Length: 239
Ligand code: UDP
Image 1 (cartoon, rainbow, N blue to C red):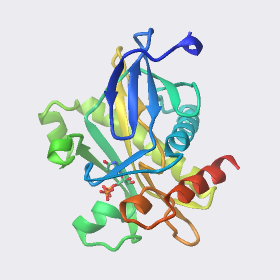
Image 2: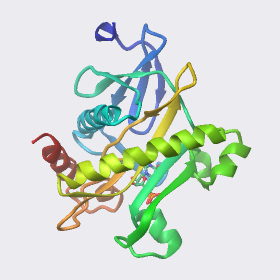
Image 3: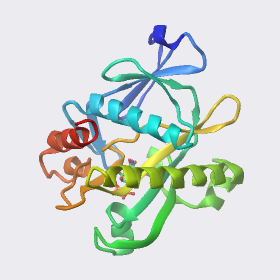
């Protein structure tokens, strides 16, 4: 049973999380760190309490998404920082959704941050640190064997559901969901499920009234109040 699962050998250490094997070959344990990086690892720091916040928030949202019809890797929260998840092979794609212009989109397209978009944009990057996660389209992904057309259609369908759910959820907290990045994985039996995390590290969240940034841009751009911003999002979700 997952309740008795313990961390065995560390499989992988990423920028924000560690992943461990367990005695169950179909389950991993992820452990969230307070480490923060930006600009492909060039900027490094610590956001005190971030690991626990991202763990709890991501698990909560994944459970809500599961109820909304999006299968996820979430199995069981073990403690503050650690969660049992389903073992998947991550598709090497960063799936980005934009509801409002910001970040690299604003830079690339010469559109002021905060400008409205006529429809949400779904875009893909190839998850590859050496190449700086380059922007790709469906043909790139299929031609390079990163995913099949069918995989991409499933990813698109789930991603639209994720966006509709999260937009409404955050708006209920007076937060505007500007953009976000998600990742999907494939289970042993070939099913695509939502994996990785959903947190202020991976979403741009602006107060809907003041447009104050409540996400990792405070760290990226040295705006100060990083910890407070993460805690504010937690307060609005959990009271
Ligand atoms: N994002 C992320 N990881 C990445 C790149 C982007 O979580 O490696 C998130 C980022 O927090 C934002 C959205 O994806 O919510 C869009 O990011 P963008 O492409 O604008 O890149 P950035 O400006 O962060 O470099």
